[in-house]
Image 1 (tube, rainbow, N blue to C red):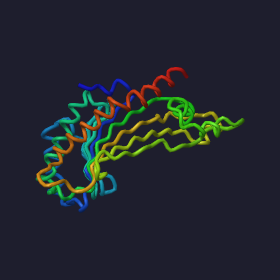
Image 2 (cartoon, rainbow, N blue to C red; image 1 turned 30 degrees about the vertical axis):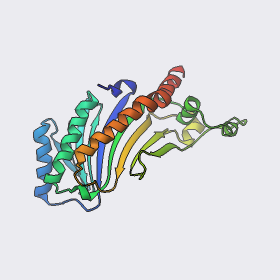
Image 3 (cartoon, one colour; image 1 turned 90 degrees about the horizontal axis):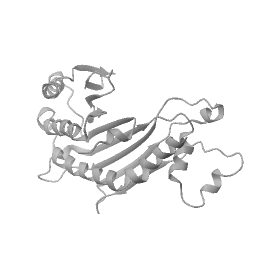
Image 4 (cartoon, rainbow, N blue to C red; image 1 turned 45 degrees about the horizontal axis):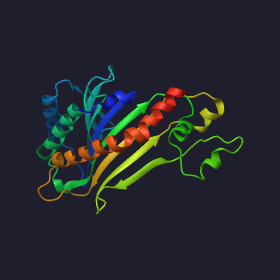
Length: 247
């Protein structure tokens, strides 16, 4: 069992299915999908729409621990903020993907992308750009730019995308998002927005014959766990944790 919630102030585990065709918009079809989810997870009882294009069913948010699912014109999402275990969150995502072929008529051919995302938020009121630079470092030659007298790092693109198969259809993306703006650096008035780290493993294109959404989710999950164990925790999260602790 993996307990990723203990390594960050907030942990998010989300799954998204992007479709090539527009999803059904009929009232009866949408309600049938959400009713099936609520029968499985009765605590998800808050149903609402955003601008009539996104429909959401979620648990109460007050505790900070809540699950949700949503439907947009070409996207189905399932998420859990601070789940008690990653295995319980996987059970929810698996149920959603098992249900969409019969509740929303989503064929395995109708897959633009299937994505699994692990998100980690860290509270740090300071220059998050410099924090990440200090924690992770960069290639030789780049340091000289920030080490010039009077220089302050105000932005950088902390992301990478790697193919996990020969066809480049299965990929992972690691993205670090500092939320420090130039105004905050200039004034010293830093906000409360967290520093975020996202690991996304994605399958692009239609599924092969005999594959299912829930079945391929298991493959993405295996990739994500391996990447966390072999790379992300040791090389990214732990150095950032340690640097925050020293500030």
